[in-house]
Image 1: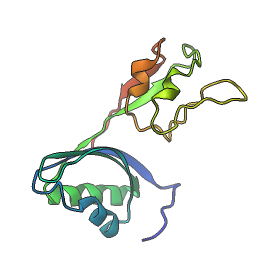
Image 2 (image 1 turned 90 degrees about the vertical axis):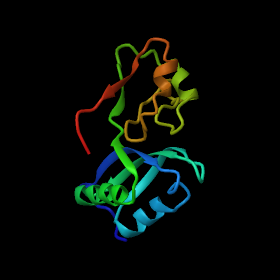
Image 3 (image 1 turned 30 degrees about the horizontal axis):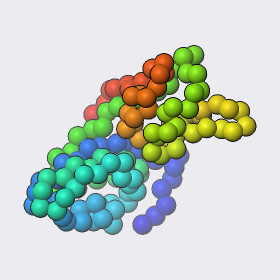
Image 4 (image 1 turned 120 degrees about the vertical axis):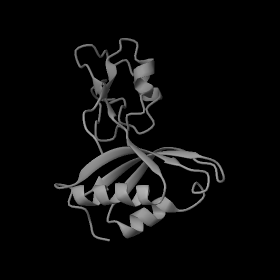
Amino acid sequence: MTDIDHTKAQRKNIHITFPSGISGKPVICQLAREVDITFNILKAQITPGKEGFLTLQLEGTRENCELSLDFLRERGLAVSPAAQRISRNEETCMHCGACTAVCPTGALHNDPQTRCVPFDVERCTACGLCTRVCPVMAMQVELENGFL
């Protein structure tokens, strides 16, 4: 495997549904070995012998991201876009920190020096937990336009 040129890298968040006969197989491991792609598991609910669900963030060249989608579909997995992202209304945000307690990736965290809550969009997995706890609704889910 070669290192990814991050200036040309593309990220795609996808939802994968595993049929019961595939949920116990190392499909994602094979994907990483056969296609020059890196991945981050954002969410998983997989039980061997039962249907499974997985949300992945793929990173690689545009071509390798497309090859990854083909790879997964050829193995009988249903692939759909995770077509949402989180945004923050900076004018509304009070920097109260409620969102930091539920953010699983640290995309939202307390800065002890500024007493503000920075939002690192690159680390955000769009899980939506912050939108549920924000008292002023500064954190919002936005649907993306785009297809896999």
